[in-house]
Length: 471
Image (tube, rainbow, N blue to C red; front, top):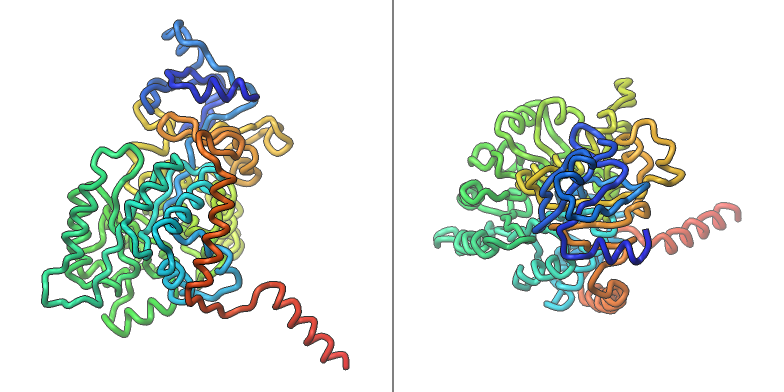
């Protein structure tokens, strides 16, 4: 597709798009098309039927392209983008040593720029929705909302409701703030409010119960990092005599409104609790590989009907690589040991990357599927490439061989937001340049503590040890 194609695709609509195939929940439908108007899919069906139904609407033919749902990132930290590489080689619970001090060093401009930079990376990787678990930066959370809107990405926006260190004798102001946050974005086309607690021990039992109630009443989600690291599990056992997920169940915080981030260390009983309560999980495979203690048992979750999506945890904004990592981590952690050569049969991870993710973050009725009435959040993927042209099983191939550079266009709410990796309507390179300046200053201000040296310093140390050994 060339620039003239882009101009047509960026038009105000309505649009009739005729790709080679449309990816439906049942699989790819060859010869199908979609019509888009007012930010939604107006019709989805065989191309000839749609063309006959609307003869006044010129068909935009997209040979060699697949139209598929956009990816949903079920767990992100948008204001942590300045320090993404600071996590390399670091052990678990780096939030105490890296993320808390880094976010604490952000002012309004740097928080906005960090969030918009993360949104840019996400859009480039095919994500049409990101789920922000709440910023610790000392700014109004609307700064993050503005960054998401300006970038053009759908955002489930968390408000941190930690109050364990506050005076428990006074009515917690955090509940009043939570109520205001849930009402603040009513009717916003791109920003969907959510509540968040960093880890269960960061909030009082009263607040854990109250945020669950408020979110359930508002049709929103509460995001909590749960059973992610061994240290957190042990602290909960010492303090409550219960594991973190069990503690949340005791205080009445489990349920369809809870989005449990990570959930990597689960007992059989905890899997049953998730299944019985309808609690959702964000399975974050890349984060597990980079800084985790374990890999969430996602194949077992799928088998037991536990709701879950895929999250990046801010590691890298690439939807295809996330889906591949989801399958790959299950294969290494569980499939090889049991002889499971299928490990979800490909479709599991593709579906959890869009429709399942949308359901997990509370947007299943709005996005994640190419269907009539749903938000037109979708990708146009070039399948006329060496990786995908010789197709025998497209869903599997998208998981194993799909690449970010094959994404020709990204749409959110029916608007063209990204064209061949470049944002439409705003200056991406200028944002990156400004982010580079602000990031250096923010990291210099922050009291970040890293356990491991940089790769270059580590190499020098290794070479020095080799020289000492040979002397």
